Length: 266
Image (cartoon, rainbow, N blue to C red; front, side, top):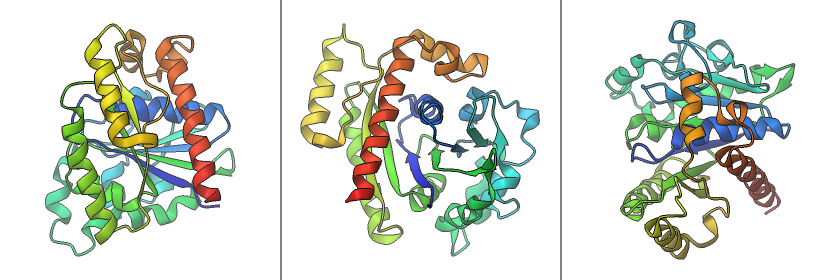
């Protein structure tokens, strides 16, 4: 069975994309999935947050996009059981200039992922690919959306959340009509929710009224342990399983799997 490819995208920075990518991957792995994260952000926070040192990144997502390495050559096993990552390097900053004139520039990642079946963890195939995008709607994000089955949108509980979401939804619709007709929205996950703050509640209600059932029931709280974990090179679920943030990501993983089953059955 072909692995499901989910892209985590939002052109706004600081909304919890990377935190969601690494903790959702860890939670999916904990319930038996084998997950590959592709770090497409030049800052490489997903790679760092999974404990991959910069000098360990001999091959990267840059090599993948330039067709200079296959997925199995670029992927690195992490200390999280059943999770591998294709790390990112600062080279990604120049990738747009390198491939901008190429006719297949939007399909580079999709092509690269055709070699995905060569990558196994403990001899078993990958079941999920999570792509962590940069905070912009650039060629890297377009590649990620073109390669994906579905998009997962992390959205911060803040005043301008809906404004940024409408721009992203327009981009997703453009990609669907021109590059990837099978692209769907897996869901919207509200992050950095502060129950002491009336605005958080208001934004959550606004987004639910606009997006309906696309918004996950699980809301990710503002949580110190979630913020601390990356500096130890660990997902929060390994750093502190009992904290509110970790528990929320476990619930989110269960919800994602449930939706996937419904989508496959449809």
